[in-house]
Image (tube, rainbow, N blue to C red; front, side, top):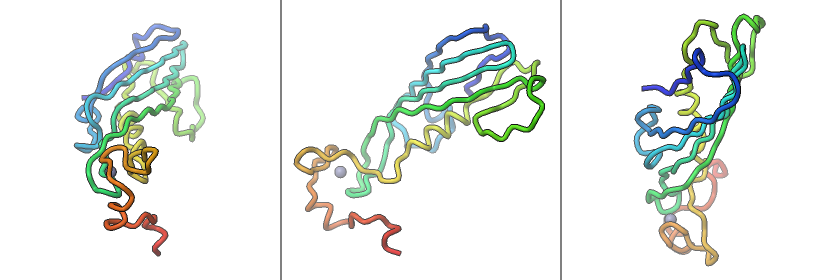
Length: 159
Ligand SMILES: [Zn+2]
């Protein structure tokens, strides 16, 4: 399965497409997001270019660094891509967000870009918010509980 934009038949001008996806469709590792992924694509097409703004909304499933339990965290992320028709741009393009497409191409595949955007939402520090009392907002455990299990230090600090 793949998420493709029908660049060949797309009308010029701007339009917004909303769709639902999931970890299977994006070939994400199992168990890193919960439930469906909301994707909003803002497209702007001219005769030789397509701008894509993608917004992804979902829920990360994370293992808490402190209590090691799974917790959920909402995420919202976005990225932009620009597809430029090959005949309009002959020189080498180094920018990662700029792609070229062939005038006779029917569609462009953005599955992998969406997948990477989701993977980038996984935080380095996997911790739920703390509530005003300093307890974990997810499991409600206190600082005293964590102290016995894990140090609060970054792993890098120990080397
Ligand atoms: Zn917790």
